[in-house]
Image (cartoon, rainbow, N blue to C red; front, side, top):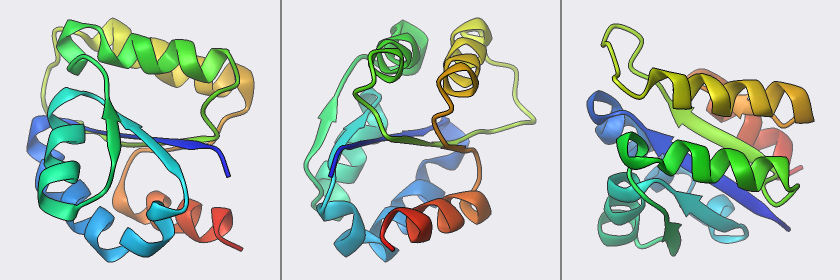
Length: 122
């Protein structure tokens, strides 16, 4: 089916874990990739096989952006903490820009992630 990227800022780890648990069956049909801690949490606590890359601040967002650019990622679910300042904000913006350039769907909160996962499983 392709690959879905799963990313969450520290303040959103619980939300993405709940989302992944709720949609576990749908997500199991996909290859999953995630940034460091998010991938580990989803693998350990939800039981999903998520291939981890570096954590976001260490370049993981850029690694995923490169895979999106190469056409290897079908959609990105990135639960963003909008009220925090992130030192790797340029990397986050790069990922969002690459998704826009390649017309790759990106959901940045649970509401849009719900719509995205339902659209991908129809």
